[in-house]
Image (cartoon, rainbow, N blue to C red):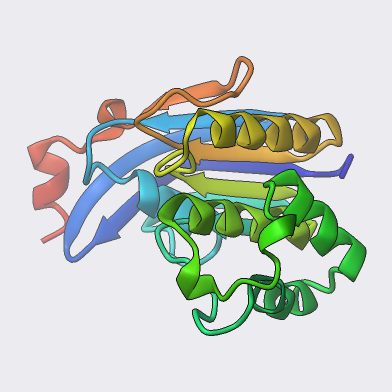
Length: 205
């Protein structure tokens, strides 16, 4: 992952005719991390989805080097399948081998639950399963939207260890969170500082 990189330049986002934010700049090289913070509805999730290529940039540019994996509020796992098979569907799409999937299950302490249907998992277990999907993907850039929601202290520690390993291997992490996250000296982006003024909003009508 030594070639991982993410660069945002003058990024802006328009949703439903409303300018959510503008002028976001960020440069991350291998091993770098960033933390987005701000009130609900200010554009944190939209920025992550732009970084993932799921939303277009209204203005500015996004340059990525390396694969991307996004963990947000959508579980995106077949509820009727055993956990290992449900995660295996995504692992195949990501061209990850069984060993990578097993390591991801172990990292999130889910190995004992591999044969349990996803619908039987608790909220915290489902969140750990979502994070395991990201880990197993082998993606260089992790985009994590409120990754600590629904996790107890022990699970947050697992998240911290997984993030630390990813960064040490040259990966990149961009996270949005209302809660403290186990990130060491991330670049901090206050989304309120990029909220549009009324004149900017009017120009989008």
